[in-house]
Length: 202
Image (cartoon, rainbow, N blue to C red):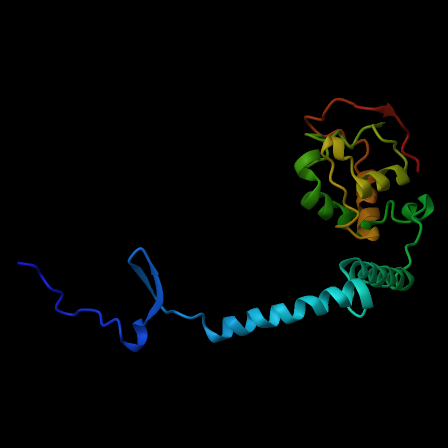
């Protein structure tokens, strides 16, 4: 005895109308696309020739290259305006020397060193991954400006982070002031000398 479904599907119902397609006895329901999708599709077809003509023929729509050029010009103007409003003062040995030996700058530099530098140079600047900063030997020059430059630009090939974008000019000069203040402190466990002998007199 053949079982019959107690709730047979009515192919004539409003939700399950069959289309007139018949493929080897296989029929399909008439399930039209949603109206919003059809209108989006029509809008894309209408917009496509307008866009092509606007970009490539009439020029009333900017191309990618045009937008990029305009954005770069705007960035250049913003950069120029910023540089005009914030001129970069040249850091001279004399400017840094004004920070050397000043207690408040040494103290500020010590805090900066502890936060940012001690992990590589040691808590007492005795040298760990980085060199000893308390002796008379310097790898990249030992003048005030040399120290400031290394702090600012870093030494990437040796893992030294450039701090120019992190620390202000004043903070970097305070760091130089602190390093000068610990010269000759001969901390315990100091790393052997590296680089060339330089008298740190500016």
